[in-house]
Image 1 (tube, rainbow, N blue to C red):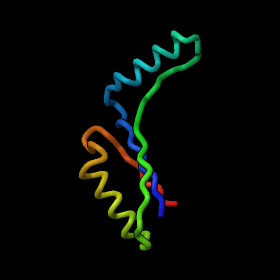
Image 2: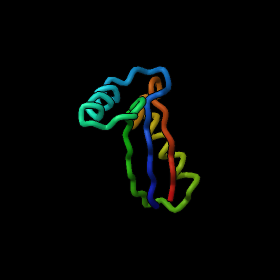
Image 3: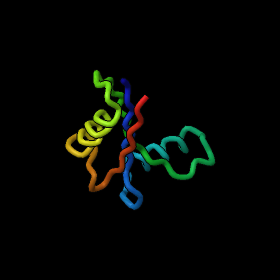
Image 4: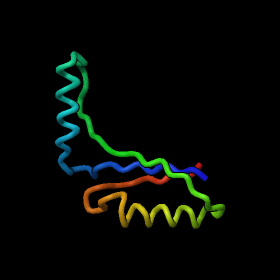
Length: 79
């Protein structure tokens, strides 16, 4: 079973890396770029066969390690 976890900053949290990317894109001549927010993606392969247990485990992984839930949101997709 394969899963993808997408972690993004919550709205209202400052994103200095996103701002730097925004400025760099402008400097490279890409006009019309409004706001850039950066995040991270984790592709995880699981040996589990129970989808509900896998989803619970993935959420626990996010809560304990992969995301800082004070300032970040996460989404779990299982394929």
